Length: 246
Image (cartoon, rainbow, N blue to C red; front, side, top):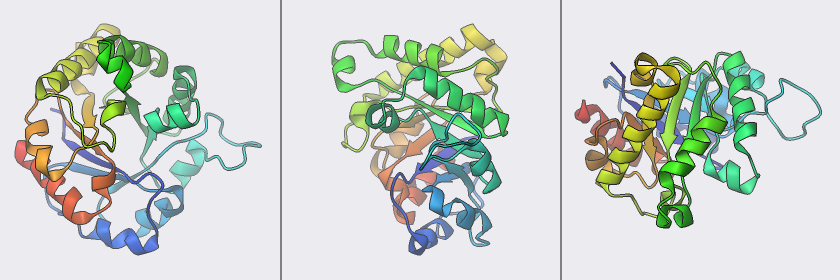
């Protein structure tokens, strides 16, 4: 049985004064909670006795070390105490020109350090309007995901690029179709048992007002939340909705 996961991506937000938002999240619920803060807060969040969440990084370099100014390796993220790392986010793919092949090498690096990779895939608005969503996702899965995927080392987040931070959300039937498609693609490549155990998250303008509806969709095992994860009131309501969805 797949345990539900509420993951928060703080992106380039968050200072030490924001740590209280994590401590104020609801506890004792039947879902996992993951926060991926900026790298400056990973160690502090892991060590904070007032936080109960799992902590992850937002990206990693494919190499373990070297002359890569400003980058952070999977080894460094694991050394700071993190358990997960987000890879292939559309903002990395677009702003930094990351290819599927590069994302694949980063996942290999994460797995080498026993980090759980949160692989992000999703189509642009133009691709969505052209009816190319499934073709795009098929290509991203094939190119970005190495062999060796398992429920214990991988989470996949479907984030339509046009829905991130825009307030727009696909129809629930579209989310259901996409998540079912991803599950089928995983089963074809890795087998049904593996596919059935890998958690699939939806991301893109998830907020308290639409969380109940999204979490009722089959094959949605949680959410990757951006802006709404920065405040305990909003993220807490999303966590509670996910817990209620069972």
